[in-house]
Image (tube, rainbow, N blue to C red):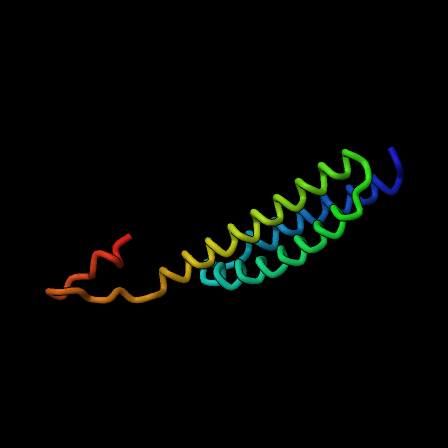
Length: 107
């Protein structure tokens, strides 16, 4: 194997371990702001994936670039959906007729 590939793979593995360690220590109350911050980071990753995919020349590079763009897009959209659902939990329920929560608010 190429020495550069081994070094880059080592960085990747170390980043995975650091990420798991950092995320596992986050208190529950901070999950929503953390999700919003990670969405911004994944937006940057999406731009990087688009730039790399634009410079792809071989079929393997094109396929990997497509997969990178697809996964980054899915992660950004999914992150915003999860953040939106988490923020919905903090909104109060409106009272409908008779003092009961309206059926629109029950989900």
